[in-house]
Length: 467
Image 1 (cartoon, one colour):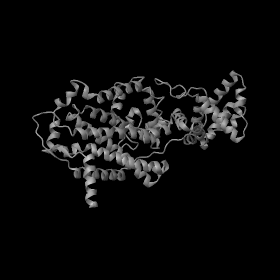
Image 2 (image 1 turned 60 degrees about the horizontal axis):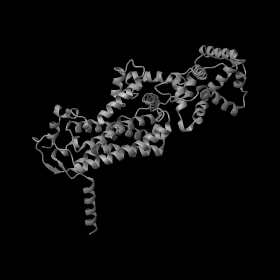
Image 3 (image 1 turned 135 degrees about the vertical axis):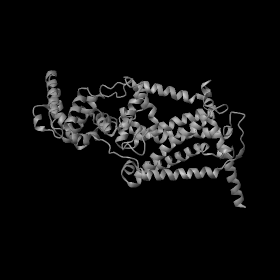
Image 4 (image 1 turned 180 degrees about the vertical axis):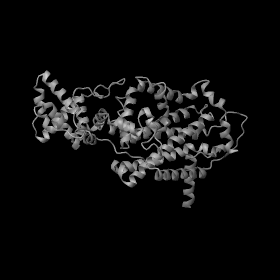
């Protein structure tokens, strides 16, 4: 008796959740894509939660962590590919026709959020690619006039968006999307001359396909692990080229660096580079070390003397050996002594930790911007062929498998054609992509344009799969 009750409950649950009757073509792979996308999302959720619990050092260095990071990456790749195909099927069969227009709108918004979620995931990976992508992403969001709201250099903010905010919105939208599909059923052929029969939905085949997809993702993760190139650090740059760090510090003091002069539609870096990169780190260092305050001595000089000392420091670092700094030459030069002290702090790692401690809620914004000002990040990205000019966001560091964010190819195409010589490329690119996204979401409501799929005659290939 308990078994019969249990079976009855399970049947009721199944009736409530699953679509039970479909047109014959509804059991084909074309109409399993939405479910397969949900499988990918489930794998992403599980692998992501494990990675969050274990921490970044685990997923970057431990063999098991690298494997889960690879599963997460390949699941994201599979999700974007499968949902793109799902959209093409719905488009080709005009599955957005009334009364299913709202279903399309909800699904289209969820689709774009999935693309956004994937890119925010790249910002968090913890390697050089994530650093460089975060910098490029900041330029894009600033160009889109959203830099005040979204700072991709702020690890905590990106973490919250990627792990909490976007997933919650996506699952709400997908719940609504599936509810609409369940209520209205799978779209029937819009042509009356197309015959079809209604058959029971083959859930066994559906779950088998989900199992095959899961195994495939695991195999790809094992064969082609997520690439990793160690992230850049200020200490690493300083040990390799102390003179470069010294020159950059002088630029920051004179407010002549890229960060100090950054303007891209809006200015998201509303901090004084002299204060953040020179004054406060130096004050923190002398407070801990007890050394004489050369900065105070420098500031007591008259304007002409201060400028001469700055010029002397520039000449010193211009002529210095890349790997060393001769502190003995700083005698009688308070400003040079200040910069030398900060260079040594940079070499030891203390300088970057001081920058991060200044604004813990926004780290590593200060450190990433400083590294960007040295020019080292662009140089390394150029060697790896992942700069924007090289369609960089589309490929990974190894240039092989797994592929990078290939879904950003339209943005790369814009950058290399219409926006190639545009000084406001980020702003204009954001406006163009935003307009195309709006057009895509509202496609079912646009007269004449919404009949384009009928003219392409692709639907017949899909409808025939169930005959």
